[in-house]
Length: 182
Ligand code: 5GP
Image 1: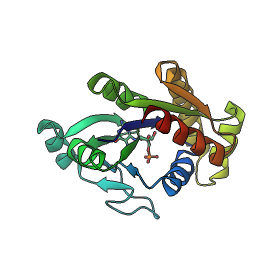
Image 2: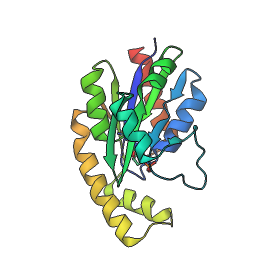
Image 3: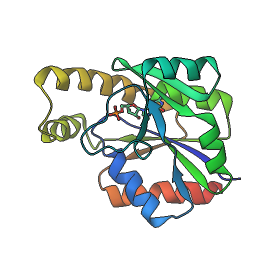
Image 4: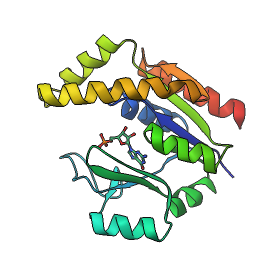
């Protein structure tokens, strides 16, 4: 049985890049594909980045107890389908990219899970990275920065806090944490 590894960090911190590098370097790592009610972005593939479902379907899944954890944020639902995560854990370690409210539920239900929080080098750098994406309005930047500050305040109850100065180094640290606890 593999480990369950929860990764949180504010939008723009570079989690996608870090996790991509970690998975390339460690074939035993599997990504837990979440379900969401938000629409797909242009580069996103159903079943790879998310399972894109309707609100009605998501609520049916909540009622059926299908989620290991779920949360509503940014006007949408996001959740980890329990069966998929458990199945993937039979063959390797499973990575969950989820925000702190979901992480808290996982910690409660599965105390053996490893919780890792990824911080930006600074708040200024995070804002610079968010702006660098180019597709975000001032209002969206303000909302994301507020949310980011709340998320970063939660890091104290995570098992590990890493700073993403370099995606390569950060991915290596995650692999070291997993190997230490394996
Ligand atoms: P985005 O819409 O940018 O893909 O994701 C927004 C936020 O939702 C990210 O912080 C991500 O970690 C979080 N998220 C993605 N999937 C899940 C999930 O299954 N459960 C929870 N609680 N949060 C999730």
